[in-house]
Every structure is written in structure tokens, then in C-alpha cells.
Amino acid sequence: MDIFAELTWRQSIHQTTDDAFLPGWLAAGGRTLYAGFDPTSNGLHVGNFVPLMMLRRFQRAGHKPIALAGGATGMIGDPSGKSDERNLLCEETIQANVAAISTELRQFLDFDAGPHAAQLVNNYQWMKDWSYLRFLREIGKNFPVNVMLAKDSVRGRLDRDDGGISYTEFSYMLLQAYDFVKLHSDYGCELQVGGSDQWGNITAGIDLARRMGHGQLYGITCPLLTKRDGTKMGKTEAGAIWLSPQKTSPYAFYQYWYNVEDDDVGNCLRLLSELSRDEIESLDAARAADAGRRDSQQRLAEDLTRLVHGDQGLAKARQASQVLFGAEIDDLSDADLAEIFADVPSSQLARDRLSGDGLNIIDALTHAGLANSKAEARRTITQGGAYVNNRRVEDIERNLKADDLASESIVVLRAGKKRYALLSFQ
RNA sequence: GGGGGGUUUCCCGAGCGGUCAAAGGGGUCAGACUGUAAAUCUGAUGGCUCAGCCUUCGCAGGUUCGAAUCCUGCACCCCCCA
Image 1 (tube, rainbow, N blue to C red):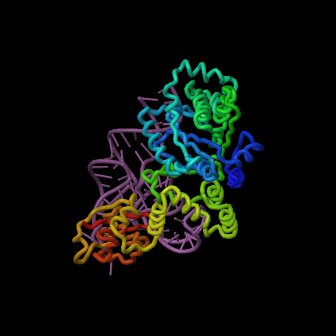
Image 2: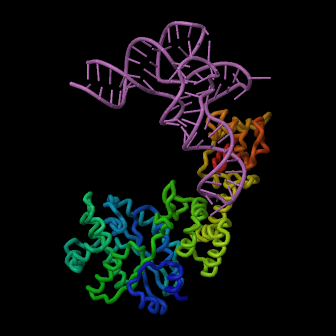
Image 3: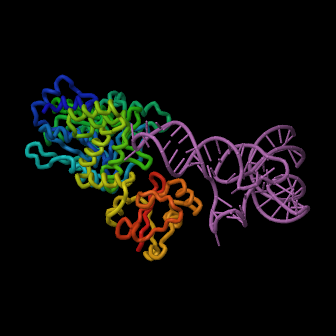
């Protein structure tokens, strides 16, 4: 497989240090490459996804990937792509973050692939023993400040009169540059990949390697995951989309991709999914013919959810999607409902409220918090916006009885399109 | 210190003695349409034991058969003069 050609049609290559040389060099196979992930938070998010998939694709093409957790660089803070100086994280946080992202990184790479088995490293391991003086003499001496000042990550900050850049962040590129050199000498790593904002750091590493007599190293950057309008992807009103199921449920993850704009979905399929070129191109054609079908979004959501959360996670996300978008609810278990409606408010009522005449629908909606007053509940029902287990209720006199339970003890109420609440009868 | 204007239901904003739970707009909520999109259209929008009743128009009193609307006092906000 020609990895360079694949990455090219996937539009995953933003810039390389040697367009003419790299395709042939990679086609020979067996190269070692790395990408770094700084522990700025306790998990990987969608923004980390592109370089991560780069590593994965390289490995499938027979190269050896190294995922680097930035235990050391994370202590400094990368100025790349940032307009303001960042606050330093405390050491315990960084260590916890390194542990969290390391676990997640493992999931995407194959660590038993013989000669091209993936490797996970933490740059804190080799940075922790350096002394300041020794680092300045051995590494710092190789960095001309005038070159450093010309890097976008620094230059963008020098023009600002409010804060500028600290010496600490200014030094960041030395650490990342040294990582590359270190990985070259310890693992024979010759290629670094990263987001387009990493260009300056990558070339800094290449320059350092040359000055220190390590020969020629290479770099490839991939585009940042942005929407057609230039804004970052992976953000919702509720916050970032994370890869960890604890931070973003498989359902929410699935829904995020399912709702990607028509204009952006082709790009996402190329950059992130593992669908074949044929399939992606036929999806493009289908989308051009009838965007309303949204086959592209569905395939994207399925592929990425399976990749991140497995078959089981995908199945749950799909089930939750069907239910939350109106499929009638019946014959589910309390456990199923609890999972599907994890973020939905739930309130308790005594079981015997269902016996006798039962529980009036107006009281049920009010109790569940779907209506602020009985008048509002009545209005919702009259206007056709009230549902029990996703079946519309039109009668104000309707009473809930034991038959209305969707599972052992739960009735699912809904007001309008999306406002759900559970009533649990104990 | 003197003079003038204001305070209305989630917001803006009409109302200036009864027909006012209070125009209009925004927002919000439903519904239709739709691609789990955007736009659009329709309806609703104080509460309740709902053909009725109760509570709302800065706060407290008063006039009146009847007040968001008139009078008195108080609080806060804005403008002009000093």
C-alpha cells in the first residue's frame, strides 16, 4: 500500500519537509515515526484524532509508530496556535493526564505487530534528569534565537502588547526538538507527524538533529480538523467531544458525527474514517445527488463510533439514537433505559400511584419537571406535544397505569421533540 | 441644592378610571413542514379545584361602585440646571 498516496487523497497532508523524497522513502516500508500528545487535559479529544489516525494508518502500511505522551513538554506549555500565555498545570495533574491519555493512545495502535509494533513513550523519562546548565550547553547552544523568533508560534505573540510570551513557553520548541533527536537515537525514528501548527516545532527538531550530527530527519503535518467556515470541529455548547466514554458517551459521540454539516462530512470521512477511497467517493456522489439522505453522516458516525467505542458501543449508540429520536419504547429493561437516558432527569414515585385510577398525565408531566405548572402541562398535551413512551397522548384525562411501564418500573415521558424525563415507580 | 422624566407580565414596549391577565415585537414552548439541517408557517405563552375563581402593572396607603390607569408618602433609575 502506498501510504503517501493514501494520505494525499485523504487530504491528510498539509505540508512535508520533502515532497519529492518522502513518497519513495515511505514506500520502502519499515520506517519509524512519531507524534506527540501533550497532557493538557485528562483525555484525548477530537482535535487529537487526526494525528492519531495518521499514526494508525502508517502502522497499517507497515511502519512503526511511536506515540509520545508529553509528560515533560506538558509542564511547559506549547505556544503553537495559542494567542495567550497559558497557566501551568500542577505536576500531579500532568501525571494523571499522562496516565489517562496513554491508556487511550494504546487503544488505537497495535503493540504486538512484530517489527512494526507500536511504542508508547513519555518524554518526562528522558527530560527529568537534565540539569539546566547541561541542557543550555548541549542543546540550547544549537538554537539561534533569530531563527526561533521567526517561528509563527513566537512571532504571533511578540506583536502583542498584552503579555507577549514568557521565556518558558519560548523554550518549548527546544524540548520538542530534543524529543525528536532522542527518539532518533533510541528508536531510529526519522519522521515526525503532527498538526499543521506543529510545523515550527518539527522543523526545529530537524535542525537540531542536523547540528548534532544525526543526519536528515523528516516531517509531515496534517491539517487541523476545521469546518468549512474555519472554526474548530469537536466543540459543542456542552464542551469538547472526547474519546473517552466517561467524558463523552458513545451516544453523544455518535450524534456529533451524525450531525456534521454536509460541507464538512467529506473532509471528516477522509481525515478520520477508515472507509475505503471507493466508498468515500461513492458517498460523495450520493451526497451530491441527495444530501437529505445523509448516508455520509451515518457512515461517518458508524465508523468512528466503532473505532473509538467498539461494536458494543456502536450498538448502544444506535439504540439510544433510535429511542431518543422517537421510536416507541416498549419491552426494555430498567438498565437499558438508565443507560439510554443517562443524562435525562428522573424522579421517583410510589408504585401504588399506578393502581386504581392511576396517575393523571398532567400530574405526571408536572412531577417529572416537563411542565412548570398544570396549565403548562395541559397546554402541552392539547397542542400535541406530550408523549408516553414516545406515543403521543392527546387526552387530558389520560391516566397512567401499570401497562404504561416501558420496563420493570419506568415510564418514559417526553414533551416536544427532545425533552425527556423518566418516572420511576418503586 | 433646584427642575423634569421614568419604574408594566421572561425582555423590550403600548396602555392613562370600567370591555385589561393587559396591544405589538423579541424570546421561549408546542405543532406542521423537513434531512435528527436551515428557512418558513400555525398555535400557545400568570396560576388554579378552569364556562368560574385567585394573584399580577416599583412599595405602602387613599379616592371610587370599580384603578396598571387618579391622589399621598416612600424607594430606585435617568435627564437638565447649580
